[in-house]
Length: 113
Image 1 (cartoon, rainbow, N blue to C red):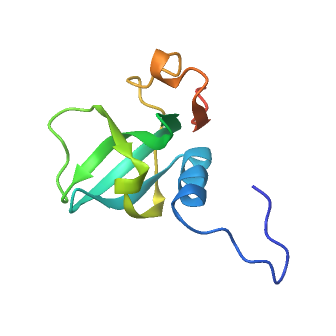
Image 2 (cartoon, rainbow, N blue to C red):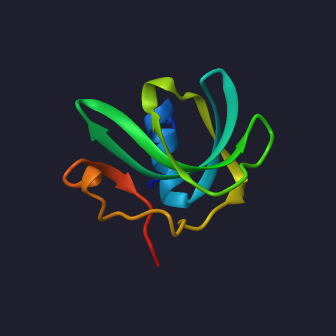
C-alpha cells in the first residue's frame, strides 16, 4: 500500500482494514454475533451480491477454539474490525484458494508461499 500524501485522509472502515490485514497477514479483532472474536483473515469474496470473509478463528470471547477451522463471516455482521499489529499469522493449511465458492468472486486473498 502506498502512504497517503500529507493532508490526504487515510481510508477507514471495514474494507480497507480487512484489505490491509490480509495483505500484511495480521490478525483482527471484531465483534460477531455480539461476541468478541480474534480472526486470521484469509480471503474476501462475494456471493449473491454480499461480501464475505473466510478466516480462521483464533479466539472467541477470549478463548481459543478446540480445533482450527475456517469460518465464513458476512462483512455486514463484523463490527469494528481492527488490526492487531503484534499478531501476525501464516496462511492456514485449511485455506484452499481453488475452492469453487471463490471462483471469479475473490476480492483479495492471502498469498501462499
